[in-house]
Amino acid sequence: DAAATSPGDVDAVPPPPEDEAPDAAPATTPDDAAPPATPEAAPAPPVRMRDKLTDRAALERRMAEDRWEVTEKARPTPEGATKPGKHVDKYYHVPGNRRQYRSLLEVARARYPELVVKVPSTPSKKTKRPRASTGPKKKRPKVERRRRDEPDDFAEPPNERVADLLYDFLAVRAEARRVYAPNEIVEAAPGARPLSAPGPPNLSLDYGRRILAVTKWGNVGRHLDAGTRLMARFVRAKLAAKNLEEGSDAWIGEALQMCVFEMDGWLPSVAAKWVAKYGGFRFAEHGALNYPSGDAEVKSFMDFMTKLRDEETGPYWTSAFQNQGMRLVDFYYETRLKVTPDVVAAMRAATSWKAAVDAVRLYDGAGPYVGGQALCTFVFGVLGGDPSEVLPKLDMSTTAAYCPFGPGPKSMILALWNKESLHDAGVVSRIAWLAEHAEVEFEKRGLSFPYQVNKDGGRRRLTAVDLEHSLCYFSRYLAAHDKLGEEGAGIAYDMLAGPIAARTCPRPPIKWFASTPGQIPNGAFKMHFVRSVERACS
Image 1 (tube, helix red, strand yellow):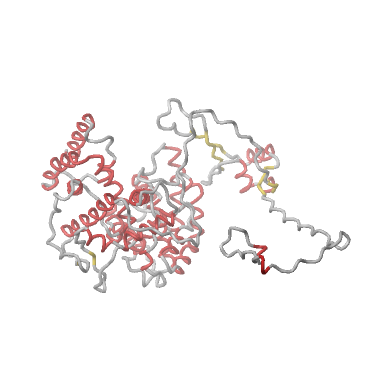
Image 2 (tube, helix red, strand yellow; image 1 turned 180 degrees about the vertical axis):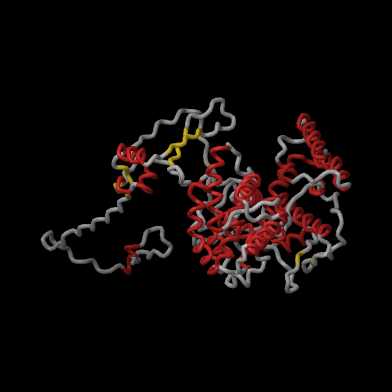
């Protein structure tokens, strides 16, 4: 009714015009007036509870009787700090038990629950100290927010320079694959010029092509990724060695465990030490390494890492991307073993790519990016890109409109649409737009993109998953393109093209060029860059 509608609502009922106003109600005396309605009391908010240790002295006495040990580890000095940090982490454990606890409350919860009670959680009463005046406060970038039911309307990318470089980058990469894989069947999109014979790219169109000609980067299609295919051969070989029936719950569960373990970011040397100590399956093509799967192997790896961190200071993980650190060993791996049956059940029930990603994310410590990349390894690698037999409900066409993304692809979407920030759904929808309109954009720029062909003979169109993969590499290429400039691209090409063609110098990765500090017009940087290229050749 009108009384319940706010003045700003679109569907608010306007008041009736004066000539249609209802007759005035008869006046009432104070005795006739109805008593004012008493508003109903609002329900009290639920009380949040927390665990509290009842007797710390009793706990310490019980721990001493049970011979608990305490290991203290100083946190590493932050990079750039002049003095070591004072913070020390404590780990509590019983001799002979690999499980460690980070606090006395955790110990009491697990071993002495009679010393723990539930108490209401009280909000903190700490008062904010006034901020020291250091000049005007920096404004955070405003995040575009919208209602869930509000459409996210946008047109083609307004940044034409970045868009031109992106589609040229995709076309050059796809053309280069024809040289390395000449037996693959490809076709041009309708309306595009016919595909020419595979060969070196035309270096006169943009100086960036000189950078692409002497660097190493991934394929356009996510299903073509060389690392994914290598990982798939390892996983399938190990599962066959364990005599697991292909497509069974155990087969799927252990395959997913290894795919997620790869994304946890352990250094190959750590896995090699574990294999050397505990033995087991070794895959010669994968550096004679092994990734743990199944209860026995995962628990042995946890035991190995618990001892290794007492003997060596690390590093244990690759710096390629963020990782969960020792939480993996202290907490996540044990809970992952318990939740694997739920992950497999959710994977079998998944009908869309997003639902399948969410299934992998049931593993503790697996966020959207880890879940998405582990799923790519499993579906495009282990299942060969065709999950119809193992996961018959999964609709692969949903990869066209959804993909988890990393920071590189997001930064490129912001650059293409000249945005300071975007909500996640806005980033995904724009990645999907780039894939959906790829054929038109290639034709508009006179680029003949060689499309892969599906098993049924149809053209394999680019998907959001493919574009997310490519935008990751493109973010590095764009950084190298703008840092080196035309002069730097010429220096790199002139110095590297000959040795690479003669196979006396490996192709440096595009990330190497993107990480070079400074820009070529700077004289000192130019000398540094030339020496770096010389070292790459040697």
